[in-house]
Length: 164
Ligand code: RP5
Image 1 (cartoon, rainbow, N blue to C red):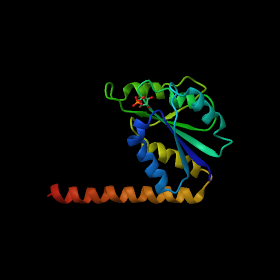
Image 2: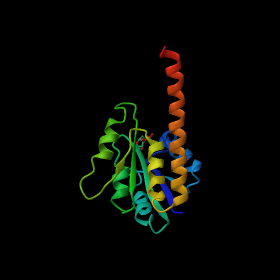
Image 3: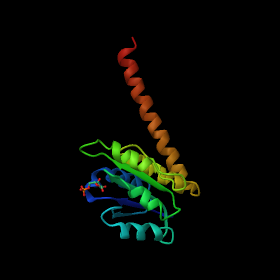
């Protein structure tokens, strides 16, 4: 199976990125995680992304906050799918990272998830691998079914409480 690359702009992004790690672990999807910054370590970020396909990666998740150029900078150096996670900041609440990550110019796509949306980033990466992996697709179906059942159970409880 291809690996998922996780790159975060700072180790301070780890509490958010942890949700992606947990989801990939739950699905037994192999991953590697690195701290590379578009601004502080641009050479290492470029080297990682330029070699990612040859190194066995199938998609890359890039998480960054503030002036978040990381996902775009990674995408500039690979044709692997890149999923950007805009990370919430103290001052602007992640809106700046969201816009910097989502507003890519034509030609260099970044699939951007919600601010701090690390679970969806991992699920999207898994869905990409599942295009050619039936076992993984079955696991995704099972997870969806479990989520549906959990919501229907909550609905039953609320209905029983209020619909007299
Ligand atoms: C971004 O700047 C990082 O992704 C992080 O979200 C933010 C702050 O980084 P630190 O100053 O906490 O290292 O590059």
